[in-house]
Image 1 (cartoon, one colour):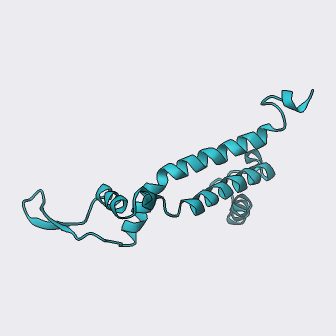
Image 2 (image 1 turned 90 degrees about the vertical axis):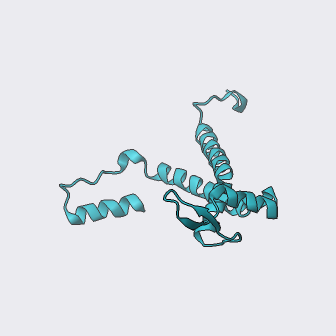
Image 3 (image 1 turned 135 degrees about the vertical axis):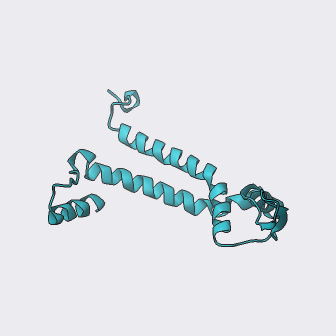
Amino acid sequence: MDGASRGLGSGDNAATTEALFVALGAGVTALSHPLLCVKLLIQVGHEPMPPTLRTNVLGRKVLYLPSFFTYAKYIVQVDGKIGLFRGLSPRLMSSALSTVTRGSMKKVFPPDEIEQVSNKDGMETSLKKVVKETS
């Protein structure tokens, strides 16, 4: 058989599967990046808009910080849609590297060989198993 007639059962299957996982991971990362970008800016306290005075359920006047989507709309107004995708390339590289590393480690240490830690195991045995699984 020549190389062009190989099917999914061939040796190229692992490389194809890994490339598929990298591509799917990159797609999910790219789609979720604007949400994580806004979330991060809110978490670090970057507040370019002042709080607004509103009335809560009990009728008291309180100050509210902008909502998630108000914040995203503000970023789009100031920086354009590209502003929501700042920092995407390092996240894509990190995601791809993580996926490739995870796949390589699964080849070296197949999940079948990893022993499960049970409550009956001694502390020393459990610690050895945890070190083996995490390395």
